[in-house]
Length: 251
Image 1 (spheres, one colour):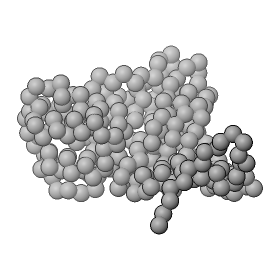
Image 2: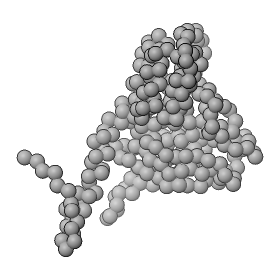
Image 3: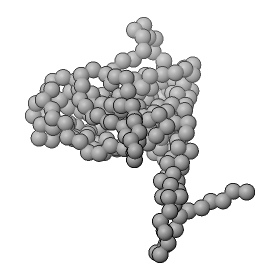
Image 4: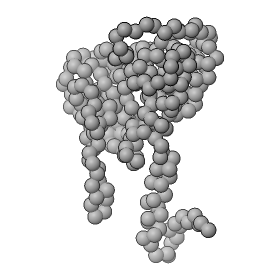
């Protein structure tokens, strides 16, 4: 026999350790059960802006090693104009104190790719005097070289593996749904991108495989994005697979 007991905290009652433990454990257990098979990655948040010679990174949450980790707003000084800069979140190993489990977090700007124990939150190449743009015209515009926040490489947490940024998939979905000649298969997938967050990695891989008549295989974020760009620009026409001699797409 099992019982589900929730603390009441009634006036006049003695505050018990068991009640506080129940209050602590319920949300943690619920999150762990719901995200048990999810890969490490971004859950939500981390809005990135450029203002007054600083990069402002909004608060956010990630799923990391079976735990939801939340960050606060942070301001990072910036003067690396005309260089590719990656906004990274580094998570250090946690440690126990008498009262808390503490994990050090570091938001940083760096040249090059995110390293070990780091999650990429976006990348850009900013010209002096320009604004950091996030109002994308279409899917391909997400990879504009200068003055545009590129979120196409951000690893989002998802069931069974990391998945693409929801904003990227929403842009793809709107391009498909705004096209009256879009194929039914594309329309159904586009509606899933708008209705279901996040779209699983398996769903992405199986969609591009069937849509482009390619063998089902593992793809990088860049390879998935390149295929979505091809599909979104094809309208109702079929997309022929181009012969490649230069290896996988790299952006």
